[in-house]
Length: 102
Image (cartoon, rainbow, N blue to C red; front, side, top):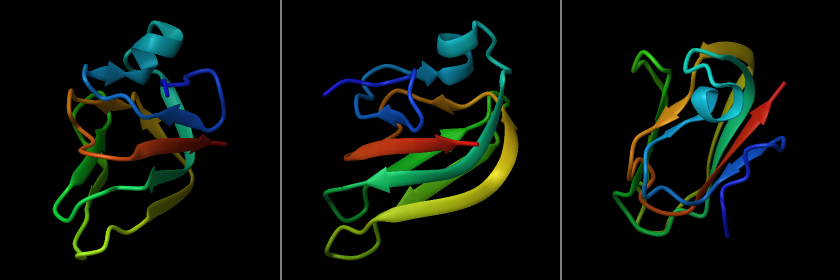
């Protein structure tokens, strides 16, 4: 599949290059995002990780598959505002990320 930026949720499944969602969507790396939830869908392997930060590098979502059987990760934020959202190249080892905005 391909990343889908213009939808709610924002859907990301290709992580070969760094992604700065504020820059991509609004030409502003510090764009304000009001996040309802972030879901890591279908991670495949134990010890895989997924990391999302603000533009300033503050972790917003930092998860790891701990079980032998991959698990589903869902963090609810209830409309918390973040300045910029970034994923470094390879920031998600497997699966896809859905970012639900308010």
